[in-house]
Length: 216
Image (cartoon, rainbow, N blue to C red; front, side, top):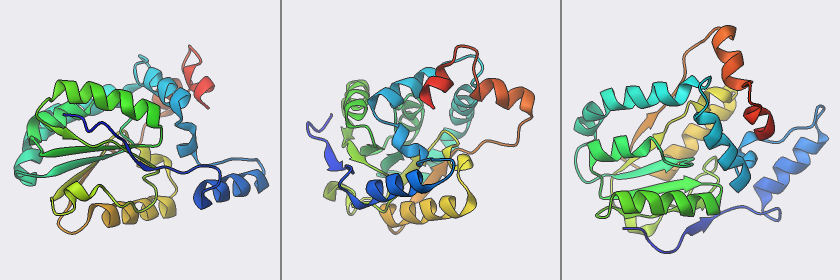
């Protein structure tokens, strides 16, 4: 069951964090802004294409790991949790976790409202008895999650090894923000890649079709 409205925690250019990131990035040499701002509708669509590329190993590897590990995750999590996914994207791996954990509520968080709306509808149709509460926001900041789940124990879900792309201080800030968002008694399931050789990494992140180049 999909809640018809998306709760909005989104930033615009007028909002302090996005504005600060843009101004700081323009002052840098070379100029750069945090990668999370790549994920508008077009960026999200390109990233989903990347995950389907034969060179891009993380998605299929993580899917296999989830299929093996999620029954144990469900045992550890117990019943009645709300699953909160940070940077949900198309939520293609999420059904594996939802099937195992059988949560009461699913809260996908993404920075692209259009993409979030579409993926939430697909998941809501797939799990008609599950309450889906899409939440448009930058998950790098502490969030005030929907009041509906204020008293519900939460299981945070952050697949995709995104945290491995961050410098240590940024990763620590993110984990603190997640702890604040999820609250007392929460659990957190994170996907992280291991060290790989250039023969694996270069094709994965510089694909022959040029999809990653278009994304960047």
